[in-house]
Length: 597
Ligand code: PEP
Ligand code: MG
Image 1 (cartoon, rainbow, N blue to C red):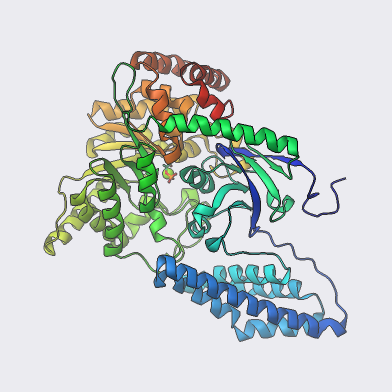
Image 2: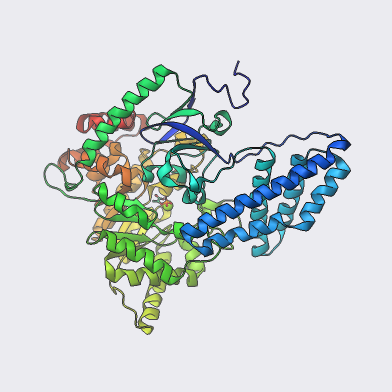
């Protein structure tokens, strides 16, 4: 028997298995964050209960209004008034007379419970707006859905707490977390994540790694099984979440936590040392960041610069677009923070699983194959050039390079370069300074670009291999779908061959080749990549010391021989076994940190 509690018997130890995406162990209180699905039961009510249901409805509207005003105030204080204005539209939905009257008429006429009636009316309104051929009105559909969910949470008495004002340390348990959810979180108080859906390269996973907190995703229904405030253990190393652990389990995990902590401390002590092999061959080891505030942590872990600055986070949680000056301020901060080391600023990569609040981009059937990244930027030259001008202005304040995402062929590079030249011209006209020979790179993350890397290499100064997308497009595996996560395999011979081909093509044209996808931060792949000739590894902040540890433990010749050997295998299992054995030989404690993978 699972017990009476619909979320699973609180108080009894239960274990849930998912995908460990950020290693380590966290022990703490669960915080159920807005489980995506609001389950509403349809039930007839007695006519005498109608006034009571209407009163509940009015109370829920008032409570929701108060909640939104609180969030608006917090966002206003943290991110500025413009970001806070996004919630004005939500407040308007709550005051919409026709919606409220429709709900009241329907409950009086049909006599169903208020949750059911309100959901029906809310869905109808959202559907009507989503079908209107006007991007602004279409956007109202998502406001209505968001507000409907909030009101339903209040009617159902579910906590939808404000994660921007957490007062104690918690483990966030959710159906999924969007980049805009995580942007709002009070990060110092979040010690771990556990979500129902997701895979290794979904943004919850990337965010968890960059915050250096353990995380398990793809847990199917954890957000329904655990209650708020229940004690849970997240074992991100082994992909397990344990709810209401027994004393014995808790004791065992506290020991593991201590041991892992010891290993991590030893790794961070490598901070000041270069990323070079035993025989003195040096590579660049940089960090991936999403916000200027990530720079100190990256440097503290020993990163020599930023190999990927994902700028799209700048565009999120707001109704308007960031101005050139606003962007310049952020880029300047990063450039000055990491100099003399380089920062590679990647131009806006929206789309896929990263959507912006109000960029008037219609929803698509296949967002990962759609109007995203460089395609969007080339289609919206004003937005693109605003960003390019900001990057160019920051280029004189540090070692700044610019990189274009989702390049599918050389034509896109040429067009992007044209727009870069136009941006320079515009700055010149206004007497603004920039670095004329700023290095320009292409992300190689689409198979067509990998296969034509020799052509593209003639027109850029460097490549950065984006394995997160390269793998999903080459193997036809959606990178955020946990059902097919087992097929998402960096060690697939096809992927290894493509990487080798990209590096060779780059080197033939005398340009350097880096990697900023998550594969670069996985210690069991480091030897292969080093042996294939990768010049730069850009990894999540937390992985910097691990990768350095591997690089500093081998000779270049050993890595080359290993890469050649592995490229000769046809069987993924064989490759996996060899990688594991090799890591066990060169840095066994990392295998422990990674749970033996
Ligand atoms: C990639 O695709 O590997 C990459 C680094 O970019 P993102 O994860 O932001 O798509
Ligand atoms: Mg990508």
